[in-house]
Amino acid sequence: MSDVSTAPTPAAQATPQTATPAVLVKGVTKRFGETEVLQGIDLAVPAGATTCLIGPSGSGKSTLLRCIAFLEEATTGTIAIHGDPLGFAEAPNGQRTRLSPQNIREVRSRIGMVFQQFNLWPHMTALGNVCEALVTVRRMKRSDAEARGMAQLRRVGLENRAKHYPSELSGGQQQRVAIARALALDPEILLFDEPTASLDPELTGEVLNVMRDLAASGMTLLVVTHEIGFAASVGQRIAFLDHGRLLLNGSPREVFGEPRHPRLAQFLETYLDRGAAALL
Image (cartoon, rainbow, N blue to C red):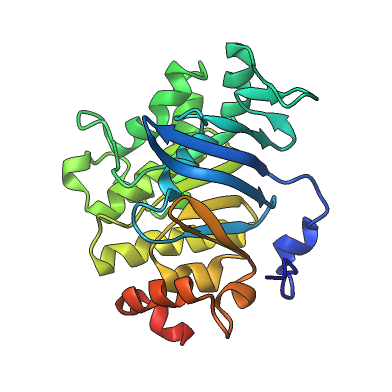
C-alpha cells in the first residue's frame, strides 16, 4: 500500500512527512512468556498530527501504546521520541544499550497518557486531581499549579466543575478531568488508550469532541480507538494492527478506500454499529 498522504491539513502542512517523527518505532517486539504480542512493529508518528491505532481486541494496540509510554519494555527494537531514544539506544552492531534512569525520566516526561479507566483520586476535587502531579512531581507552587489546572479544566469545558469530586461527575466529565490532568504536564505527545471504551454513547461524544479540539490545535495525538468514524474523520494517519502485526499504515483515504484489505474489511463489518457504516 502506498504511504503517500492525502491533501494535508494546516497542522500537517506545518509538519512535513520528512521532519523527524514525534515517535519512531523500529523493529519492536513484545513477549509475555511464550506469547509474542507485538511482532516487528515499524511505525513513524508524525509531529503535529493525529494518528489512530485500530484493530480487533487483542491485536496489540494497547501494548504498543504502553511500550511507547515506557510502561512496558519492548523485548526487542527501539523507540525514539523526537529523535531521542527512549529506554534503549541501538548500537551500530544492533545491540541495545539501556539508558540511564535520568535519561529515561527526561524523555518520558514529554509524553502524556490518558487511559480507559479515569484513575482519579476520589478524595480530591477535579482541580486537585489536575494539580497534584504539578505540585508533587514538578514542584510547582500550589497557586501556580492551580492557575495552570484551571486553564486546562477550562480547555476541556469543566471550569465550573473544578470543586466537584469524582463521585459528583459523570463518566465523561471524569475522563475530561483525566485529559486536563495529562495536558497540565505540558506533554509534547498525548497518548489515548481507548478513552471512551467505558462510556455510553452520549458521554463518548463529549470526550471525542475534546479530542477533536486537541487534534485541530495541532497537538501530536496517538489514539488507540474502536471509534472508527472518529478515526476516519479526525485521524491523519491510520495504523491497522492484527495479531501483533502492522498490516496497514497510511492516510484514511488509503487505508479505508476501495478495494480494502480483506482483513480490514472483515474488521469493519464487526464495527458497523460504531460509525464504520459511513465508510462503506
